[in-house]
Length: 76
Image 1: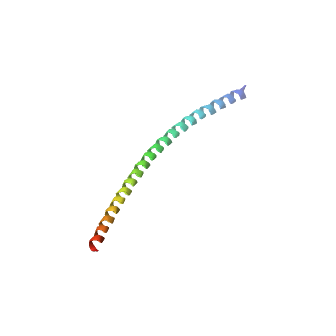
Image 2: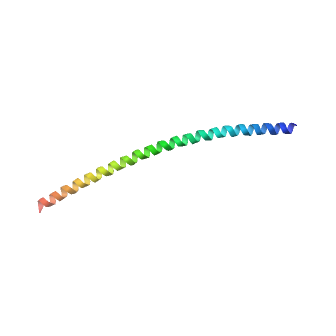
Image 3: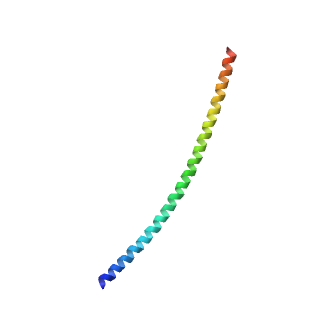
């Protein structure tokens, strides 16, 4: 019976450790999802900012082209 008791104790220990590991796994998955959401939000913000910068650059280049054309017409 002693071997059976030892086996039972070992199984209980393994099951307890498994429960702890499952909870840690859930916690880590939650942390991962939270971090992923934060990075996705930051990524969207940065992409929006880049698009605003590109749009501003296009506007400035269009104005410069307009001014250059105006100068060219005036000097002809």
